[in-house]
Image 1: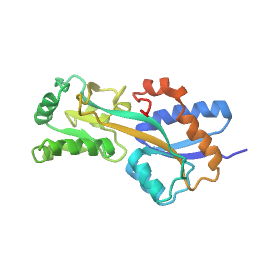
Image 2: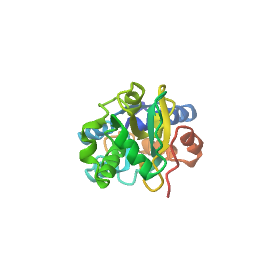
Image 3: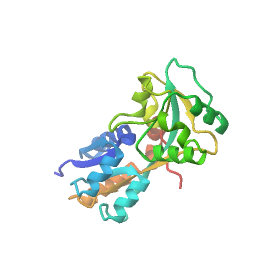
Image 4: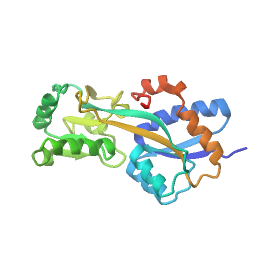
Length: 231
């Protein structure tokens, strides 16, 4: 009998991984326990050598962990692409964000703007820098605290606009989805699964990774606001 496999991931894939793990357990009798936390903290724990079997994080973080020897070579598989969406508090006037000009104006009009600590948040900050808005918006930008999703900040009215992966915004009470980033400004984060170098059951963990990446889970990905990774 193999002991339960331990995994660590960022918050963006927590629901996906919970459902994939439950399905794998039902089919194969192997328990999989994921801890989903902030992506920066998760990467730091893996980098420190924490004993886990499975790691699921944004592709750039996974590349760094692979380079430092914290993941098993050739074990990485993309499991989901996650588009960033824009949200506003429910009941609040909803700005138009379907073009670059409209989004720029909505940002300038916002009292406060929420974004995440992950790669999507960094991509948003890069966009603001490209637009020359960093200084103009500096006092209005609110990075979500560790463990607090942007959706919570939006729902509580702490920000007028929130930017985060659709998978973390959809279905959250008190949040109205305004739409994705405008055409040409799309921000998509790829999430990758891999076997940790510390795994005591690497072959079993690899079978789990391969299953999670399977195209037969595409309907689940779509239901959760995720997309099948493009080739």
